Length: 343
Image 1: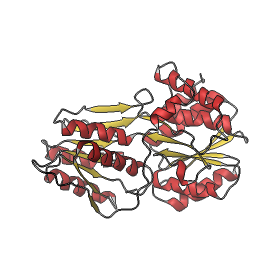
Image 2: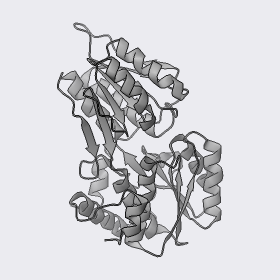
Image 3: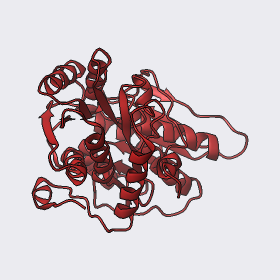
């Protein structure tokens, strides 16, 4: 496989950057004949226009509509109190598949799924044990491992930063994988870690990113949802430093300043489950996607080829193959990271 082929394959579908939408974005097409299959999505608090988590899911909905001729609709959540009512709207209207975007919707989805046993739901980044729910999970630590390896190859200060949203297990996977990847390439690289305590506070994201840069990090990986846009804003005004994007392809938000983005292919999972719904086929209880399944990965360095060399890409490809084949097991917890001795 030629250098970069792994990442080119993962990045064939570029995400469109989406503007903020209203409370209900109805995208149904009226087709002759029977009522089309209907797919609904309930956003988390970041909403459409986050250039990340929700936009990735919405890109999947748009692709499903184009390929499958299903009808799609989105309800945006302004607060956590909106989750259950939004899920209820789709369930009560008989939607064929309803996506809950975000782990924090799990308690509300559990109640709604129990009440509407004949409807089917999917939740992203949470595992919910219910017969009519598919739990979509991503091995984010694996893609973060590659990002950390790349950061360790590129850094000149031997210090790189991680900026998380909320310090919860699912975000720690990004932190731990990133630190493990850096350790695999250069154990002497320091990984500075900060958490915002929020996924939506863009100003706080900017402030803490500035702090990390001030402490010597010349690369900051922001796994913080919408708040991570603050880190991207901060990097624009600084020379000699980079950011790493997350969830969707954020490279174009600051061309040449985003080293790469860690992609979580939420769009692919949405298309897959929408296809099964359109075909009236059973959906799996759990859909777990990692490097091997092309469910996570890095972007193709479109704007940073002057920094990311062919030799670096070749090394990343080798690491990708090693993780995919199980020769390298990426840690997912801080305890496992402490025991990780590299590759």
